[in-house]
Structure formats: structure tokens, C-alpha cells
Amino acid sequence: MSDYNGWRNRETWLCNIWFLDGIDEPMTADQIKEMVEDYVEEQLGGWEGFIADFIDLDLIDYDELAENTRHG
Image (tube, rainbow, N blue to C red; front, side, top):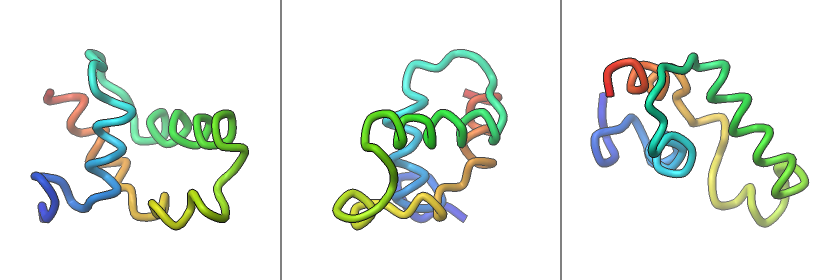
């Protein structure tokens, strides 16, 4: 089911734009999730407070994102 710009939800769409734009190789859901979590930890110092109000990481569909890297 696609509800937001062709993606399951806003969180998945945002993750695609911010992390996968320009990625030309297939990635697994686990690889994408690790990339996002590492960024959150390194750049934001964790996932709480003010930033957490903007996006819920638990709503990101990493399987959908991985499938998109396989089919462009």
C-alpha cells in the first residue's frame, strides 16, 4: 500500500530521499537501517527529545526501501 508520494508512509519516503538518493547498488533492509541509526547517533547524538518529534524511526519500512534499491 502506497500512501505518501508512492511510498508506504512519510517516514519511509523521507528516508529514501535523505539516505538513498544516488545509491546505485542494492542494499539490504539491515544495511539501510544501520546507516540510518548510525547517522542518528553520530549526527544527532541519539534519538530523543525534539528530533524524535519530527519522525518515528519505527515507522520506516526498511524492506520497501531495500526492494527499491534492487529495482531502481
